Image (cartoon, rainbow, N blue to C red; front, side, top):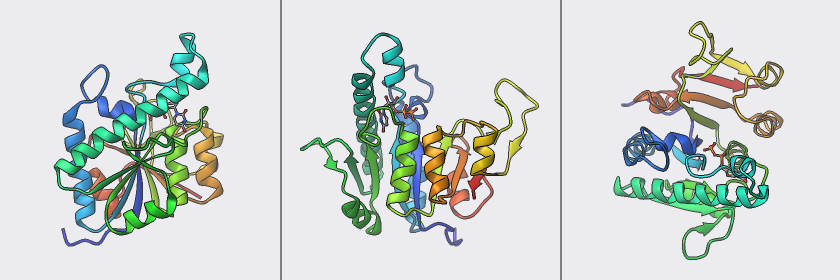
Length: 239
Ligand code: UDP
């Protein structure tokens, strides 16, 4: 393509569940390889890519806590799960010859770099994919909040949330066939209508910093490239 990207630097959020693909648990390598291909197309047109990956395919603190575990311990396990997913994603990206750095909010010397914003900016500027792992490093937060936080910190032009549906609907499109999709929404509409795009902490962060957010269907081939080129994929949330 000879079209110019609309966004110079993006922060892409993938849920842990997205990595499961057709599996019941864990990581489906085919999903990683397909994401590596799509991310490679962005790098190829000069887009700087930061990523946050969830951990819900492995552990979630809230679920562990519901089963009787101490919540903070469960959240620590959830954050470690995101590091495992980040390592798997890095592996797939590097097999596709895409230079990738993993940073962790929790220091893990010898495995990944400790999160350092200035170093992350240097890596992004030089064209490396940077995967921000271990969420925010704090219990009681989510990787959606981590994605918004890192997106704001590294001054991304857009936070992109990859989902299994084609954007934000007025009701669950899987359960309700007449659900209507929104092309765009304001932060306050998301909050007032309790649309559950991301948790409240994440939405408040992007609202307070006027960081635009786009929700799109990661199972639609080419959608990521199209939206970075300015195409109208999914739903845009902005001020
Ligand atoms: N987590 C946390 N603090 C953070 C981010 C994540 O404690 O800043 C924990 C939390 O237990 C969460 C788990 O890590 O359930 C996995 O993250 P998340 O649920 O956001 O993953 P996703 O739903 O995107 O797969």
